[in-house]
Image: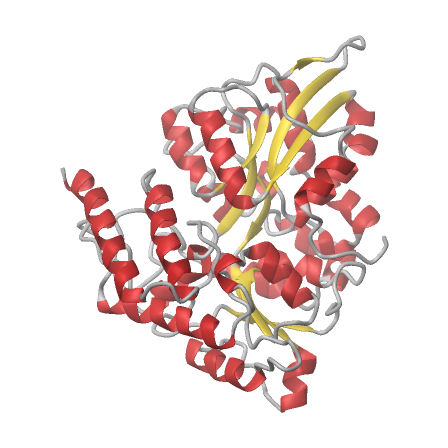
Length: 450
């Protein structure tokens, strides 16, 4: 693979995949008994890989063509929610996460997948990591989305930049230590930020890392009795800390930087640290896509008052109830989330790029263990440590580490995130942003109190 930016621009990717991508209703294709299914997925590196591998592997083996539509995270969330919630029926398989799966299962919008997996002799459901299974299951205990890759969060740091300053990163740093390191390593003259942190609006963008900071500072969106705490001293302290840190020592244009932008920034050696998803490590360790491959250290998610603070997430394949190609859709889901697909990625794309974090057997693969030595163990431990039932210092009314597992949180989190992004951009204050957020949270809480 030629050296290229870490994340291919979505429009360019879609153009290059024109032969096998695009939206449209499902149905049989015109040539014989072959079938075509439509897939809508988030534009992360692991999805880029599957779009490139499908035609020469899955389609050749099954005769099933997959038409991909690939979108950035915020756009993906809007598009998939619109299609699935309105029963639009445009897609046969979609990528959703640990937030949507149980809620949409309860709404009756998704096929349950346990029965398909049980009949699939080669699937081995028992090999799936239990934190991922639980996060993607409904109240009935059945699986409603199959994990494509799972993740927690950790702190990534540039070992060369740290060595040059004589700084040692502890295995379990505090946020105060991280802030101190960022101050020492921030070098505007060299174009190197002390740290990269998401600032892009979106409940799954800036509030993914920020809510973990709130948790470990002792804050919460809601207390057990649904008392909203968005403008509480703890929530405010955490948010001010985060906003000040990224404003003083973060990347340029932080209020518009999400996962993809920080992946590019850190991967090009333009940031000394990055706190984000464990799934980023596979791309960072790919020398064909990253300038810092072999130079990255990995530490547990920084803490303040809690023992750990990593999030828990899975990007997973789900089948909307509206699909008319359920059997063909399951064949794709089974292939995409199975053991053989991981080996295919390793052989074709590089072993560090496996969509890991979902199967126990992944961590027994000799090739993966060798290529992922720097981050495999800490990723698995971070996933196991994440506790969606008790991620902070007080009981919660709903499940979730970096989100609140209720339908209203997508709108609430997104609206508050817009205010926080404005604070990062210097257009408002944290106090004003959270005061407005408290009013929105009170409206949500009133519904649940009743």
